[in-house]
Image 1 (cartoon, helix red, strand yellow):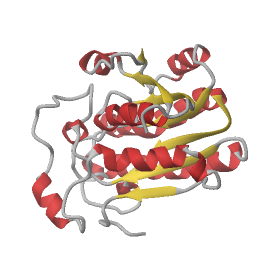
Image 2 (cartoon, rainbow, N blue to C red):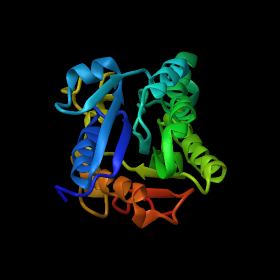
Image 3 (cartoon, rainbow, N blue to C red):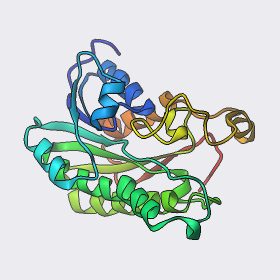
Length: 245
């Protein structure tokens, strides 16, 4: 789709992560002008030539408001921000780890929507990123799963409150083969081994493999597009059939 008609500015929060970098490329090909918002250390690790990159911590509501004030009108916003704590039973999580997970996933999503949704033009779209773990409990992922379940509800709430001007939807991926599996871009050593056996995970999946970033960016671009003009308040599971609600 190179050379597609311009679609406007697209803010991508977490645009330096594995899915984010793929989305920047795919969004450009679709005709969007990406604006990346991410942690300064993530931008330093993965600069995006020719793309506006703005350093901001999404857990800082005041900083997000300041960034939003300088943004152009947006065709859409994609929130890819988030990270997972160490896998252990929920009640063994420290209060600090619990708070960090809620801040990094759920609170940041609220702060970002509050600051940036007013910049989205009428007819535009907001796409959140949840997780299958927010709908299908698995051992060891308590704070992360609970925060992602909150994002699903936030998606529905905002879809009601922002309709009909802005559509709000959520992609809920299973595990994706990115640095997120080591803790997240800007928060971990991306060369460290993943937290679980990727080959075994893929063998369990009906599609026979773990997800790749492009498996998630395609559904995101669909939800942003005019093809999804009558889709709002929905959770789109992208998991190769591992979870079928």
